[in-house]
View: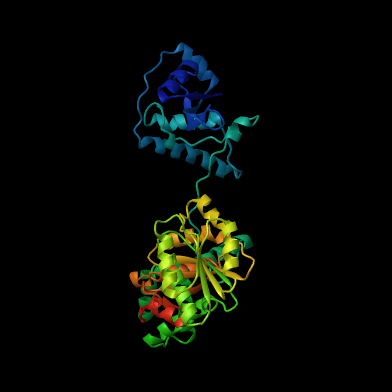
Length: 457
């Protein structure tokens, strides 16, 4: 028997080559789409690999006989022909009691006999032709192993054998997959039914634009506590349990205002968040409520009338003001304000996306005395922007955060997202432009009331 492999662009090209070289009695054994050529795995072209076979005697006789036109075989007849060929081979193998192994000649003869009932063999589509493994062509004896028909499905195992492991490694993988599924299901709100009171609180947190991971963590803890107590909570108990979660979250994230031993306080942040007004509120608060002698410094010489705005506040509060433009000016200003208990410094607003502008603050944030650096952010900003701003300014040792424009928003989840992702302490909040009244020192209870919609600003 002669077996030959062709790599062509189209099936008509393959048929022409097979008929001219092997004759009209050749049998196509397999077709497969492959990719050839290219450079480093790219620009490879699609080709068709065709494997055909013919008996030697038939090849010699084919040169003497007139070529007969090929007749098309109905699509339904092709699988039937192969099934009959396989059945014949399987029957012979079963009779001998050995594993069936048929040569190409025997398979071709079986296929030819089955195909005569339907007509002459024509070109078979790829799906209808069994693929020959590449290892068969590399062996010294080219043989095709005919697959044995699968036996019918085995009856169900007895109950005492169902739990018997067939392979420990498979069971370990199944057990690990089950644990992952349970973990995902625990975090997925769609895979569980929450009590009505807890579901209402969950919706409230999502509406407050909190990160889903933090929401699911709190809800899962409350749900676990509810299950441990026998699922007998009244509706108001869910809010109490959630307040415990929020209080635990805020326990080490509330700053409590300016420390008594702080001598120099920097106020930094992006443009338009209200740094200058906030600085005036801090100065009035320390002057009137804490009795400290306050001085102010501004380096915001870029914004029109920024110095005049702070100078007006300094005049009203009767506190000294120094204007600096360089680190040398800062040292001279600090020397002139040496008699003050607290010096507040207003920095210029910077575009947080511009690394060069933000880096200019580094030269001004290196004092010798006890200092704190406050980042001022607006609650009207998006949660993602607040995180990006903090990421850029956190290179310069931020200590606490001041959140402004509390009165201009109804979403308080972004502050929790910020405190969850960065080691900042919430020190002040502002809810208006009145100096110094609209300055708040937040507490855990106040922030929790804002989040759950039960408190006032």
